[in-house]
Image (cartoon, protein in one colour):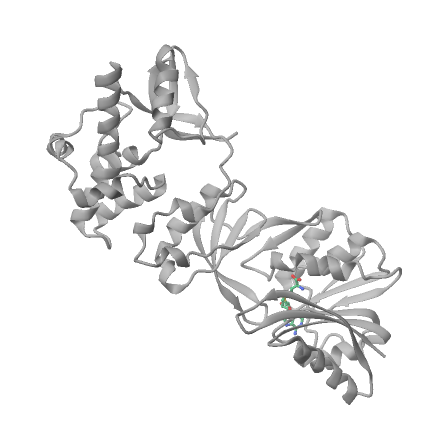
Length: 427
Ligand SMILES: C[S@@+](CC[C@H](N)C(=O)[O-])C[C@H]1O[C@@H](n2cnc3c(N)ncnc32)[C@H](O)[C@@H]1O
């Protein structure tokens, strides 16, 4: 398990159980770090609000060295909390939030300076003072706080929104925190409304805290351009956009800043792959990083799979996944579906997953299909009948008959639009 430097109460081993119970009762004991024995002492990890607020940057106090509180703070420490703040005292923000409050104090951010100082006292010194009093006066023990590298235990699963206090936000905004987001490998990708963007760091840190496997949180501002690549901003964690995403046993190389990928298509990738019959020749016209092709190849029935994409980075990622999964029967091609398929042979199955634009490629898809072949057509439309008609009418214009075998709603796109996939047989 990884270690991290955390704040801990140091007590003699003989007193450890009594103090542990007290800290637990008070909600101060951290359960995400392992209680550690060091010689005759036991270190009990505690929430670091007080340390964050009291740390060198803000108040120049090094707890490990046991320095006294500087004189200018001593008077503040004795102050009574004003009644209007009493309600806030029970709410302990997570550590990163406490440090943000500390930063806010230095930088004079949004909160009024007075409120920030009050919060600092509430969340930091107040907590320490009360503990000190309880331990020293009632139990005759000296409170010793130290920083120590402690072993991290599994992060608790949970709703990240519970870690973000409502009073961090303007009224009503907490309710607008997104309840869902995508997990791509070890990267969390989420969308935020404009009014929540200023809280990106807090939201990102809360997500990392509640999702043990996540290393990075990225803000998704939508897919753009011909390559359909996401416009991303890093919110928290390690700076990276590449990862390996596991999908039904496949290890797919993803770089969200370089090529399109959505984990929401996993079921669709597999549904199509499972339809492929022995020896079929398949074309994926807008393959992206190739998940359809990889699934089909993994099923092991196709004679040949051609994966075409105009984005060279997407094809490079597909190559990496082919190597990583030992799947060598795919033919990756970089090119424009409009120009490079002119003299291509015909296929048993053509996948057209360009939901915003596949409409203008239907004629090409139909030309490349053997009689009786299947088109997997994607469209973002209000109603599924609209998407089906798009293919049926283009087929009719070229003297062919298109019959819809199945329709799936891949995902809901907006309150009025859905992303549908159509299995269409064309004679
Ligand atoms: C929605 S993404 C594909 C997603 C992929 N099928 C998957 O399941 O992850 C659409 C892809 O079409 C590619 N594309 C766009 N226009 C193209 C064109 N004219 N020819 C070939 N590929 C194109 C983009 O680069 C992008 O990777």
